[in-house]
Length: 337
Image (cartoon, rainbow, N blue to C red; front, side, top):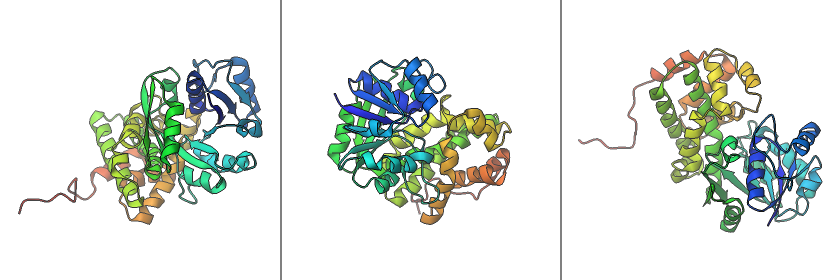
């Protein structure tokens, strides 16, 4: 049994707490919101973000960050990506040398273009930082539906430790050394999912969705490889797998926000209706900036940015994408002479 601090009490943090408790670990859940912790302690359920998932009495809840971090074998950083750096900085006085920390959020910092693991490592240089990512909506994990995920770390032993901690009959964990690729896949698929949702909101069909997912994967892979990630990662669970589920699932907040925009709502109205952090909105500018920095063409990401921040109508964005210069799908393939 491991003592684990769950830093964040959103839907994903609660689903993972349920999983880890079922795996026999002692979990302490932290939130900065007093009302949220009181509700969780009283109801043993997150009524707002993960209704129907009942939490065992063995799980503890606290607003005291020191309590959540002290004497823990593993800290799981599960706050929304826009709060990752701030929360890591607040944790610093309580994080010991060599402390294992696994990031389970997805995003890129807009002003620095840093992935979340890099932000955590910068704020907590004494820690051993890893990432857990894949096609894992909290609503299904909390119901015990089977899925698979990837634990990525620079050290093989750290990835295998996480594999042991999180694995269960319904939660299969693979390992990977490609931390950068895993982080980029998790962040950029949210931007593509906004586009997929917009297509649904416009009333387009399965053909459109399949095309967006496929070209989105191409964009994600091009950028990731240019930055030092590996092609295998983007063809795997944290690339293609996570992209498919986020673009297609009714549980996807990014797809839902895009759907509302496709129906005519403004980005702010869509986010307000979703009532949870829409990570793709916060990663879109960073993805575009990285594409420019590394000289990578990402037309879907570019059009999502124009919709979000320049007022481009969703339907016009689709026309722009369809009428781009004609190209070969795979530019490196050779024709017969």
